[in-house]
Length: 312
Image (cartoon, rainbow, N blue to C red; front, side, top):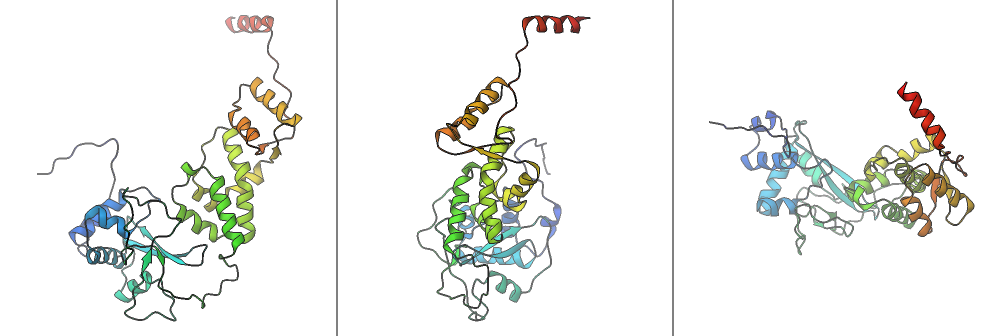
């Protein structure tokens, strides 16, 4: 007998195709159901799965490999700013095409094709910029095959011909400045954001960094929700802002700054973010250099006349 109750919060909807897939073992179905209950930007790490389910290295390897083979998990190989590679797992709620064992091995290999052998396995170590492990436990002190991080097998990636190199100091500096300028509470996955940033051309990276100030100021002045940094990069929202809103930087201590503060106060608009920018030496972005005329406060006679008009 199955007893169900109606859930109105903190629940997950999963199709029955997962539970009917006879290619999966019980622990593989359980791990899939657990991962599908996580947020969309959840970073999947083997070490976290091991601690969550008390798996050994071989069990974790078998579960992940079979989910990849049966199409429930897709692996993307991404290049970080320091030139190393990392595997990014993508969980599907609908199985994709089934892969052969050789295709699974190639998908999981972080070694270039020139030096890879049939028996080679990548080794991993956590990246210095990684966020804490999702399960809320510290990462293991001894990295191993189960730590899905940056490849550190001493392999030289000389065969990679990338004219727009991501290993330049200027690109790393742009990324660090972008990461610092964006509110940390609106960065769900730094790894995903870094990957999206690397995929941009050098010109677009500079434009993305320059557009953060006007974009954030526009959101706050209009009391709009700030999107996640990955959404900002993926949708290139700085281009949308430039196409629709012309912003001018206003510096604190200038006549324009005092006029804008007076105008927003008289209009009943918030000024906390503006004043914070001026106090910290940052520009506040406005649609025009000077604000419109202050809204006139209606006289008592005007208020009384309006009230009488409404009562008629």
